[in-house]
Length: 272
Image: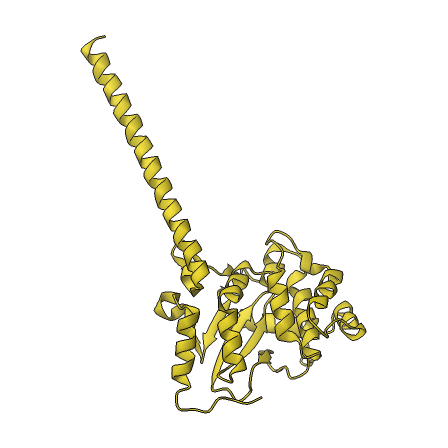
């Protein structure tokens, strides 16, 4: 074998080795990133748990939704607020801190947020430290097609009439179908899930779901979301401050609790 051939073989081996090393380094980097995301999900950090390419993982809207409504009046669930930004309140009305949550029951990022923060939010609600205003959006219906966001939102409002919004809300997220599916469009399935909430399944709930009694309420809420200029769900604000803008969005459940308790320091817990 000549010198030139040897040099060429050496260069080929070096090139192959270099490419292999680069590929291995990239795989290690990707595995490391995936591990960090998994760890953050377990820890429940807002952005770290939902981090995608360095940003907040939200289901971004390209406009639209489950139709629109021009009604100035619409059916109102018990204790829900109307106006331009209809919402469902959960927690003691007299609580000094308010968490505003814009969400879509088909939204995977919303499900991740709810899973990570649910225990702390429930604790703060039950202790009179926090009230939560839930605003429903239908982004995925508008972007991916279907009616699951609308139908699930209506069903949750039907549960509000029975005083079971929070419990049914949590059941919906615990049984959220894959993003590509639209199982929440099946009203029979939504009625079936009511059986997982004590005292909710009833002829009144079934009729409310089947009639779409609160569809206009959900559509109005989605219009409010679009008009507000929010970029995606979940959008979460504590006492008016967007948590995505706090610490780069890296707010853990423990830190949320600390923020609420500091804001409420020296004040009596709210009472229902």
